[in-house]
Amino acid sequence: MSGIYIHIPFCRQSCIYCNFYFKNGLKGSGELIEALLNEIELRFNEKSFVPSTLYFGGGTPSFVETNQIKRLIDKVKLTCQVDDFEELTLEANPDDMTEEKLKAWREMGVTRLSVGVQSFFDEHLQWMNRAHSGEEAKRALTLAQNMGFELSLDIIFGIPNCDDHQLLKNLEIATSFNIQHISCYGLTLEDNTPWKKLILNKSYVSPDDEQSSRQFVLCMAYLTNKNWEHYEISNYAKPGKLAKHNTSYWQNKTYIGIGPSAHSYDGKTRSWNVADINVYVNAIQSKDIPEEVEFLSDVNRFNEYIMTGLRTQWGIDMNELKQFGLSMEEFNVNLQIGLNKKQLEQVGDKIYLSQTGKLYADAIASSLFIA
Ligand code: SF4
Figure (cartoon, rainbow, N blue to C red):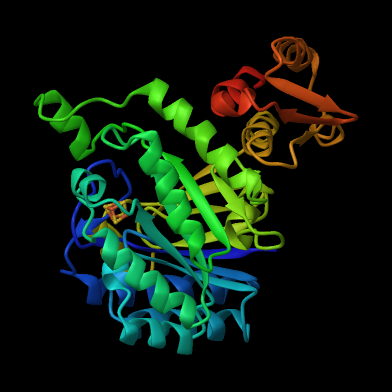
């Protein structure tokens, strides 16, 4: 399975925690869409690529005109010679999910919406500077479920003014809709975000690690008790409803990213387009794809397999690791430490995070890296 990701770098306003590449407002969106269409042509006229999934992320793809999304879908189908996708996902914010837009997305073949709900409580949404209200989110989800979209919801835990009771209420409301997928993300403080500046100004509080860990466990317990499959550290699905496009990232499948800041992976190299709309548009107009490419060594690929595999329910497979042909001595010592601390579990040739280990997934994965 291979996928195409298209980055739409425009948002209505800046959420305080966000460090994705985007601009506020729609200025320049016309030129950017033309450049995206041209990048699709530049990439796929040269080499054949048959995508099974198409994913619009951002930024906020739901913010731009529906006809612009349709042109991009049609262009991918025509250039890659595919009639349909196994999954066609569009990231959408509730404030964009009008009946008119939902109908248009449905008609152009969007099968799945990944909806940035984050919380149903207005005090949390306002604190994060989200552009919608809790009621708007409920109205949008009702409309979308009635139109037959597959739905994935993003919920954030660890918001400083969100207590445990409110978090559970968010999960209860989320699962009362006909949704197939939930992503639960911990609020993390990234560099170059409005939140970081607000903390420096002393007008906002810092994240509370203890609250974040406790609420991660609450999400896990609530959803797994209701038979949601916890298949990746931040992701839960109804049986058989795993996110196909994102799962291909975690299972080391190839993908191509289109647009400013989008990443690609072909099994041997990783590349990323420049994160600047003007530089991107100018380069594409000169028929140049403005990307940097990194060749992955066996050590890079070994460590990446550990980082992504350990976060999933499939774990890491010792047989796969041996195929890299590297010395396993350092890995085996660190694996034993993780097993002794009960952060890791071994079943046959497979290694998994324990329930406690899930709280420290990235740190444990890094401890297994080889230099
Ligand atoms: S979180 Fe999403 S909607 Fe908010 S600023 Fe970032 S990309 Fe835009």
